[in-house]
Length: 375
Image (cartoon, rainbow, N blue to C red; front, top):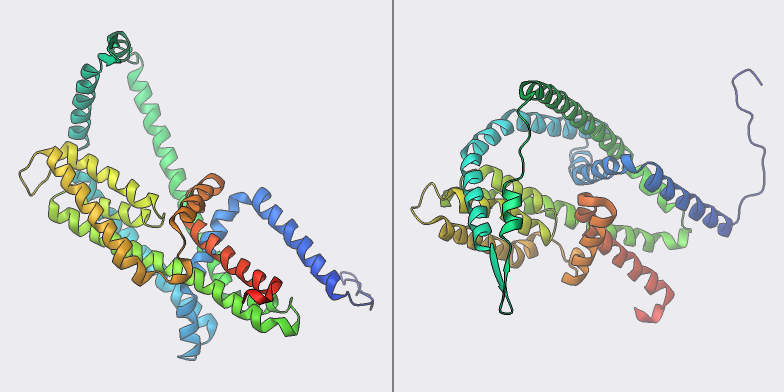
C-alpha cells in the first residue's frame, strides 16, 4: 500500500436490521444534540436556506422535467433570478423606504407623545382608591425632574458616538451581506442534493415499508408546501393591501406600514396585532394627509381598517391560500407560537405551526401502524 492510501476495510458480517435501526437512532440523537446545542448559531441560517430551497424546488423540477433542462442549469437559472430580484430590491427598496419614512414626522409624534404623557401624569397626580385619595405627585415630579446628562464633553461624546455608530453600521452591513451570501450557497447545495437525500432516507426502511413511508413523506411535504408557499402569498397580499388602504386613508409612511404588515404576517395570530400598533401611533399623533378629522377619530378609523383586513384574511384569503393540512385549532396554534418564541425566538414562532402540523401527520401514521383497527 503506497503512502497516502487508506487501508481497506476487511469483509465482515452484515449488521442485522435491528442493529442498523438502533445505530441510526443513536446517530440521529447525537446529531440533533450537536446541531441544537453546539451549532445553534448556524441553525437559523440552515433553516432559512432549507426554506428557500424548498420554496424554489417546484420551479427547478418543472424546468428539469417539463423542459428537459439539466438540473444544474435549472438551479443556476433560478438562483440567478433570485439574485437579480434581490439586487433590484436593494436598489429600489431603500428609495421607497426612505421616502416613506420621511413622511413620518417623528418630531411631531414625539412632541404629541410628550404632551399626552404630561396630561396623563397630571391626571394621575391624585388617585382615588375605594374612597381614599392617594397623592402621587411627589413620585411624578421626581420622574419629571430627573437630572439630564451634563453638557461637559458633549462634542467629544457626539464625535465618538458618530464614529461608533458608523463602525457598527458597517459591521451590520458586512454581517448581513455575509449571512445572505452563505445562506444562498447552502440553499443551492440543498437544491442540488434534494433527490439524493430523499433516496438515501427511503433506503433506511425495509422494501415492504417504503411505499407507505413515501406517502408519509408526501403528506409531510404537503404540509410544508401549503404553509411556506401560503405564507409567502399571504405576506404579499396583506402587505400590498395594507399599503393601498393606508395610502388611500392618508396615513403617513404607508409603504413602511405595508412592509411591516407583510413581514409580520409570517407570525400567526400575534403578527397582525403587532403590525397594527405603529399605524395607530402614526394616525393618533400625526393624523391624516387626506381627510380633515380629529386624530383620535382617525386612529379609530385605522384600527377599523386593520380589523377589516384581518377579517378578510381569516375568513376569505387564508382558506383559499393555505391548505387544509396545516389547519389547527386556535388554542394549538397559540401554544405552538408561544413555545416557538421561548425556544427559538421569532424564527421559532414562524415555523411553529408547520412543525406541529408535521408532528400531527407523523403521529397519525404511527398510530395507524400501532393500532391498525383505528384506520
